[in-house]
Image 1 (cartoon, helix red, strand yellow):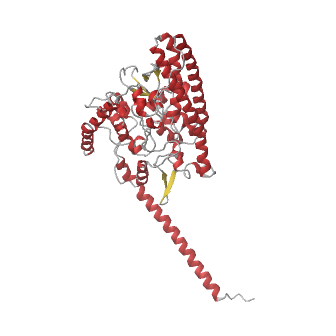
Image 2 (tube, rainbow, N blue to C red; image 1 turned 90 degrees about the vertical axis):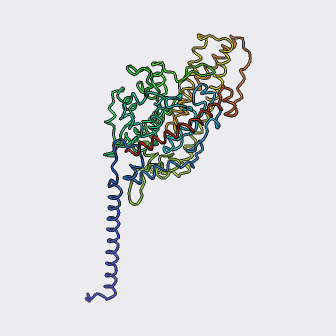
Image 3 (cartoon, rainbow, N blue to C red; image 1 turned 30 degrees about the vertical axis):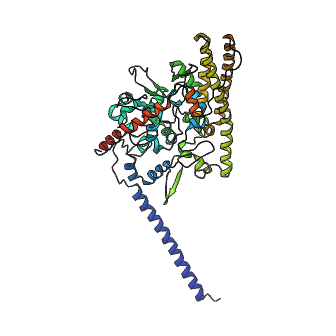
Length: 496
């Protein structure tokens, strides 16, 4: 048998060996490059001070996260219902003006933009008024709490009680950096951390220790520092008169649990200007509603959908472009769901259509209830005659607002929100039956006319708002006080 290898086979073997060595070399080179890139990317380039409020300083050590965070400045996304642009919601739905008559939201309510705009938006809204001096303005300092990493810094410096004291404008020169790194991360370990005293205190009142929360729980709890229902309690023992920030979770987190809590402590956000009902204003109970939905029950965190992982240059990191999952379906929804993008988006819109359709119906009923209650007072109704009616308006609108303000709730927990809106309709319809009977007792025949509120301007005029005066005050604030705040902030940052 001839075992002599033919020359051409030797050449094939030689060339194949060269190719394998070359490819292995490329692999080793790529691995080495990625390791060096990772070392460079995560080797601290700057010393981060305790509770450092400037996101730019954190960005020197974490450029990918920092760059993705500043994508929250993009306001081009538009979904079927709203998006991230600066939309005037009172123009979109003038009925809101009547529902909030006598409250700041009737003056101005714009859709929230990305986190990078937090300071600009709270400065510009008419709800914070137009202060003419350092301690003037209608809102308390507590209103800054969810807007800036300067807040935990300031609380650490002066204490939580002194931070909550005073008017909104009194802290204006101190709070200048938009929501960012120090709100959620420890500057040494980079671990997720809670900087919001109200959340820690809410856990403590329920006999829980928030420091025992798992990492996965923390990926939602850092969001729960702000995306929750809350109120300002001025009657806490030893803190009398301080508008202390409190989460009303002592009896649970359902709409009925928090309503029961508010009734027990006698909390009223404002008295309605038309109906005189003692009202509750839901803030944004996003976390509470999320916990009741299928994703919350299955341990899917807020970050999984709103801040999914992404890869750049071989590096995996959390995308800090906090946004709607509908603008990032591939990295959020399709990590778990295998359906096509169009089908997934359609599922969301179908749920939103159903919830919002009923919610709009509840809105119309509530407008009528407020107007009819106002007519009863005009005809001489007594407080005894109106007591149950006003309580019904309070409960019906609380359910409407709970559903409306829990942004994303139609996705997070559509079954629960459908139930909440449905009970709101029942309560409000029963209240209007009582109103109809009382109107007859007071000698009124026929139907109380529905107000002409087709535009925001018409609705604001109907409830008696002098918008020109408000706009003048805000213009004065921007001209006189805002430059002083900005100058003081620059002087302070120069000392860091």
